[in-house]
Amino acid sequence: MLLKPLRVDASVCTGCRACEIACVFHRENVLGTSSARIRIFKKEAEGLDQPLVCRLCAEPSCIASCPEGALSRNPGLGTILLDEARCTSCGACFGACPFDSFSGDPRNGKPLICDLCGGEPACVFRCSPGALQTEPASGQRDSSPEEGSQ
Image (tube, rainbow, N blue to C red; front, side):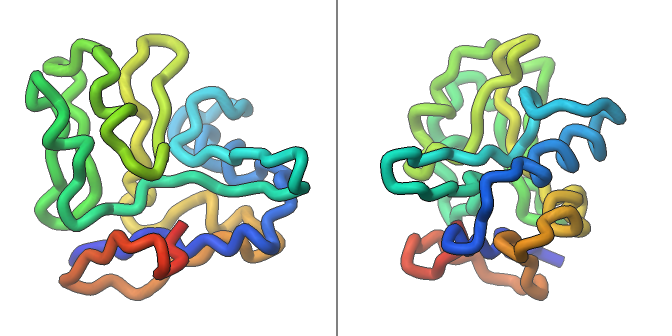
């Protein structure tokens, strides 16, 4: 079952960062935001908060850019996987993502890429305003920005 990317409605995002906290707590059982796989980009001058999360591109440039072959696609879910043993923290994948959808772990510099919590994203459950939503899974990927999937 291929997972669909999160639907993001920035117009209702309050910038509360509950999604980031839920992500870190789900993965590490600690409170914080620095190692979240979703990030809130604040456009202060415009008063806009934009959640940034992996769009599950049809042809992920992050995978193609990795000189060590440390990134791959999970064949069952369609999410991006990191082979931590092969990753050298070079950062090539960060620059390759056209959506700036992931960042480096502050502890080791390795990419923090959303895997949708295996199909039940913790961030969606904590997003009170409804800025984050899931869609039924399918067999196709669409990475067009017009879709509103980010």
